[in-house]
Image (cartoon, rainbow, N blue to C red; front, top):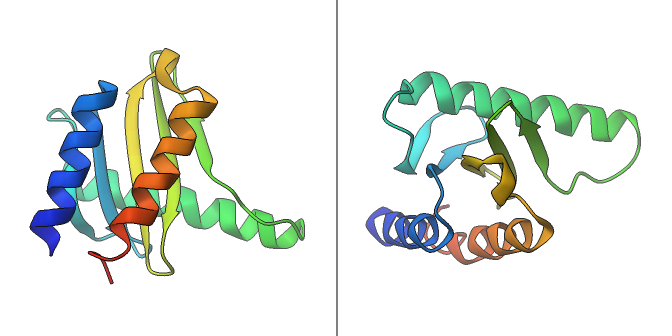
Length: 118
């Protein structure tokens, strides 16, 4: 099942020209996918889970549902969307790529991955 999820993520990355796309648990453990080569995988997924968890806590405090998280850096952007109740999907690419249509496609990919990742 994880191999199927990895294929879906790789195709999404290739189709969109992304630097990385991976699934991780909400507690910060790597499940599958691609993390850019210059990054330490375990640190990357742990920090991504922490960022997502912080945003979820803020959303609860503000009494509003969370849709997704975007972290914009000078030349790259990280997008995090929920992947079921126990996982997240983290996508990293160049900043100019992250338009509303890509964000929606990422959510659609996350929805399709739910059957592979429990």
